[in-house]
Structure formats: C-alpha cells, structure tokens
Image 1 (cartoon, rainbow, N blue to C red):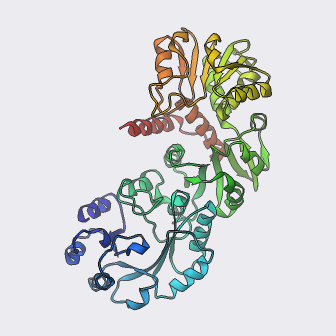
Image 2 (cartoon, one colour; image 1 turned 180 degrees about the vertical axis):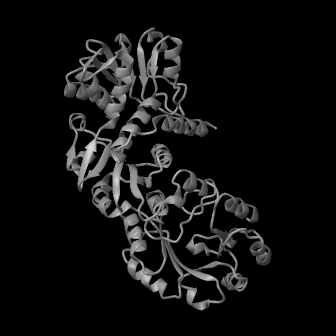
Image 3 (tube, rainbow, N blue to C red; image 1 turned 90 degrees about the vertical axis):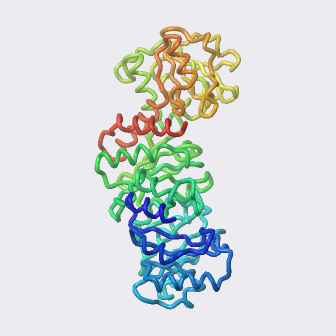
Length: 482
C-alpha cells in the first residue's frame, strides 16, 4: 500500500485513499501515515458497503478513531455511523453512502440528511441502470451547498466520474491500476490523467462524447481527447453507454448535461435520425448518421463515415463526386450490408460505379441493393465478380480472428484497390494478402481517423490534427496486442 501511495503521488495524485479493509493484517497506522507523501483519506469499508472488512465493527470504529487522532487529512464515515464518531482536530469528515442496487430517486433529500451529520464532504455512490441516473448524480453535485461527490457505478455510470469536477465535486475516485478496480465502472488513475486530462476539467469545459452499447471498446475518447489536448482546447470527450431504449431520454438530457456534440455508433446510427431536428443529405439517403452537433439549440446530424470512406476511395481512383469521379463504370464489390456498407454503397452509386453487394445474409444484400438500385450476389458467388474495387464491410478478420479473410487470395489481382474497413488490426489478413498480390490497399485506420477528423471539424470548426490521431490509434491497437 505504501509503495502504491508513493507511486500515485509521484505521478501527480493530490489525494490518495488508504483502504484499510484491503489489508490482510492489522495496519500500523503510525507508520502508514508517517510516510505519506501527500494528503490521504482513511477508509475502512464494511462488506455491506462493498468493502472487505471481516473483523468486528468495534475494531473498525477503533481504527477510524485512531486515524483521526493521528491527524489524517480525511476520514470516510458511512452515514449510519457518522454521528457516533465526533469531529477531532483538523481531520475532515467524508460522510458516505453506498447503494449497489440502484440510484434512488430521493438523492437531494439523502444529500441533505448526510450534510447535517457534520460533513465536510458528502460522498454518494450508487448503481446506474440508465444514463439518466448519471444526470441525477451530476445535478446533485452542481446544486449542493456542501461539497459533494456523487458517483454512479457500472459502465453506464463512468461519465459521472469523469465529469465530477465540472459539476462541482472537490475530487473524484480512480483506482491505482486498471486491473485493480474497487468498484464497477471505475477508471484507473492513469486513464483519468492521460486520456481524459481530469486535472484540466473545470466548470467551463465543453462536453463531447460517443454513445454506444457497449462503449468501453471505443477508441474515440483516445483520439478526440488527444486532439483537444494538442489544440489546447478546454473540451473533454466522454464515453456514454446508452442502451437502445434509453436513447430518447438521453438526448433529452443532453441540454442539461451541456453536451455540444456526439459521435453515434452501434446500435443508434439509424434511430438517431428520429431524435434530431435536421440532418444532412447523406444521412437522409443512407438512413443513418454517426455525428450530432448542437447549433443554435438545434440538433443536427451528419454522416462522416460516408465522407471518410469516399475521400479514401476518391484518392485511390482520382476525382471526386463534384468534379467527376474516375470510379464511373468501374466494378465495385462490397462485402457486407450493414451501416458502413450502406454509406459506401451510397457514395459509389453517386459516382457511377457498377456496384455489387454480397452478404452472408442474402436478404440484407438484396434490400440494400434495391434501395440504391445496384446489384446483389449470393455470398457463395462473390468470387465470380471481377472488381476494380473490393470493400470489406464485414467483421471477418477482426481481432481476435486474425487468420480469417472474407475473400480468397487467389482472386486478388494486381492493380485492384482493396479497402478493409476493419481497423483492429489495421493489417488484416485481407490487407496483407492484397499487398502480396500487388493490390493498392486502404486500411480501416484511414477511415476511422478520417471520420473522426470530419467530426472534429464539426465539433470545433477547426481542422483536426489527423496525423497525431492516426498515431494514437496505431499505438492503442499495438498495445492491445501485447
């Protein structure tokens, strides 16, 4: 524990919690506190409150009193025992409440009750079952007359940890290491510092984010926060896990949360069009959007997947949609019929390409082909097409299935352009084999960074540091393999 304490302090932690209930043997408080390199909170949590204390309540109370007598900076007292431990010396009192089942409706009344227990700081930790629970917690922090930390646990609750300081919390909680999570949804100290730049978040910080379900795998927070940091912008990009049925409520909550822009991904790309005031033509034609920005109190949707994919393809073939595309009359085989395929088929059709769609689900291929007046092919017959452009929009070859490819190498011909929209890994088996066969390749990293760069422009009005974003993605993918 002492080593971890010194490590965190050396890396910029201003306050460290000492969890005495995690110790296997009775702690030497005098030694622990004498060697502290920064202020500490002493906590000894009971099992019913999510802790590991197994000895008697009398022993636990004695430890807490000893910590106060030793002059520790903060002591954490659960709301049902706070009145039995009086204030002493300069030690500040954190009065806490934990609920691992739900986020109660009566948070303001609960906070008022806890504040009356001679609290210097009120801490409320509850389980989030919807994004709206996060708003309730953040709202309580913003309007509390006593410094309050309100944390929603679980992946859905992660935004409450990241945004705590913007909404007035004196500090928030993170774990020593990502593998030593003490509460569900908790981020590591390193993640809070290096990804979200927590120490720079204040009341004026503008909020952006990504909504998905699930959302923890998303690399978007990495690249957007890195871009905000490089451009010295007082902005933070937050992952919001939003279940499908919660989308309308979340979008209604965005105004109070102060959200300025969102990236939209699975499963919300189609439904989001019903939750906005305006959308651009590609979003309307594709039937999906991946970006929402707030402009003059209007919610406006855009499809930057389309722009990013077609920018890469236009670069390979020459020309563009407005000035005449060299794709006209070229044969294009699109594998898959999901959201990304819809965006790419729309762009190819507008440029006059001869498009064929092949999907492992024949009905989806037929439906997409009918929508854009192009052709479909049975999956088993995909190799009978001789395309100038091959685009993989399926997950075949995605991590961890690295030895799979959606298209046999035998049919990859020199001069073909092969575009794999998978970005993890960047060098899929399809891309590797295409290079071996002297094909020109476009990787999924180019599309991922491209769509994010277009989003950044919509969010901020400025050009994105695309090369830096590309490097961040590649480092993250490389680290994930280790």
